[in-house]
Length: 160
Ligand SMILES: CC(C)(COP(=O)(O)OP(=O)(O)OC[C@H]1O[C@@H](n2cnc3c(N)ncnc32)[C@H](O)[C@@H]1OP(=O)(O)O)[C@@H](O)C(=O)NCCC(=O)NCCS
Image (cartoon, rainbow, N blue to C red):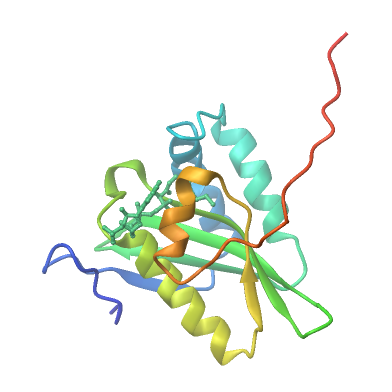
């Protein structure tokens, strides 16, 4: 049972599992696509492209994944990998998503609490992630802060 009882509904119980198999990840692809095709991302993921991305993450060295379950239903997932850094190992949180119908009821913060607890036990020095402005508040409420002077750059090829 999840010790991270979510806060809004007294009977809302989330179980977090650390350790996600490739088969499970492939099953989460639909949930991933629905979550990122909605606001504020408005992406155009399909089950196939989402499966390819999650499979790619799964292949990274020192991959770690967590799944959040309510009853028998998976309602959220987080994946990333441990990387070496000059100050010690860090965790790069690549993706974190909650099924559209379960968002806003504490599953995301419950997942983050489990991730932070598990990684602390592994002597991980910090967790880093990239996200969009509207989502900043979600992470700030869980103790994250914005890195000053750091941004993401892209070089986009133009279609001829
Ligand atoms: C972002 C996401 C993981 C948050 O999970 P969640 O279960 O909906 O969030 P919670 O219910 O645990 O919210 C915890 C707090 O963060 C806030 N929060 C959640 N999503 C937010 C958002 N998109 N923007 C601003 N604040 C947000 C909540 O209002 C809540 O604040 P409160 O405690 O003061 O009421 C989820 O909405 C999601 O999967 N979104 C689509 C995919 C995505 O954006 N993933 C993150 C990419 S880095």
